[in-house]
Length: 373
Image 1 (spheres, one colour):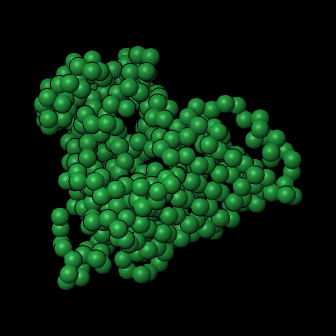
Image 2 (cartoon, rainbow, N blue to C red):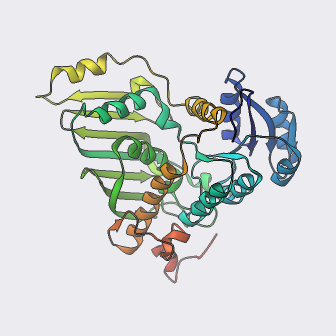
Image 3 (tube, rainbow, N blue to C red):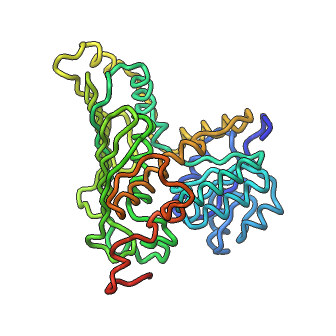
C-alpha cells in the first residue's frame, strides 16, 4: 500500500457484537479512519448497522464490495470459518486485511492466507489488542532490558464459563466451523499476550478433554510449554469455570509480575512483587511507571492506521500470529497423540496442519460417539 495522508478507508465484514465495538473504536480515530462500507449476509441487519454508524455503503456479498467500492483495509468480524476465504479474496483485490481471532481454523488455512499476502500489495494482520495496553508495553520493554532477570516460570490461565446455551449458535462447538474449543477460540488471547512478552516457545505437552459440554470440541485443556529461553509455562484453557478470570503470572529472578482481568485490563489489573533479595530499584521503577492506556482495541487500531498511512506492514503481522496459532495446533497434537510436540514439527504432511483436531479427537472416534452436529 502506498503512503497517503487522507483517512484510511475501512470496510467491516460482519455486523454482530464485535463489529459494533470496532465501529465505535474506529469512529474515535479523530478522522484518521473512515468507515466506507459494511457487509453482512443479513440485508436488514447490515442496513441497520450502516445507519447506526453512518456508513455510506451496505452489501450482502463481499464480492459486491470488492467490485463496487474503494477501500484500503477490510476488517473481518465474521465467523472464523469464513476468514480464510474472505481474507484471500480481499488480498487478491490488493487491499489489506485486519482479522479478528482466530485468523484461521488451521495452519493450512493460515499458510494459504500468507501465500495470498505474498502475492498482494496488501497486508494481513490479526487483532491482538492485549499486546497494546500501556502496562503490557512497559513490561515488554522492561523484560527486553533484563530488568527482572531471567524468567523461570509462567502461568497462563483462561478460566471462563460458557453454558450449554452458548453452543446453540450453529457454528459453535464444531471442529469444522469453529476450529476448536477454548484452546483456540478463547485461550488464544492470553497465550498470544504471553508469547509477546516472554518470547518464542520450543515444545509442548498437553491434554485436552470434553468434560461437560455437548460439543465436538474440547471444553478444557492443560499444557506445559517450554520456551526457547528454557522457562516453563503452564497454560489452562477452560469453559467450565464459574469464577471467570484471565490470569498471567511471570516468575522472574527478581520479581513476580501478574495480570488478572477478564476481557480487558487497565493499569490496576497488573501487580509486581519484588523478590526478597531484589534491588529496591525494581519496585521503585514499577511505581514510577506513567499511567498507561487500557487494552481495548483503539491502541492497536491507531498502530494499524499509522502503519498503513506510511505504507508499512501493520501489527500484528502474519509471523507473530502464526507462532500463536502453531502453539495451539501443537497443544491439540500433543493432547491427541500423547507425545511432546516441538515447534516446527507440524509440517504440511501432518494431519494437525490441516485441522486442529487432526482426525484424532478421542471422543469422536469411539463407536458410541456422534461424528458431527
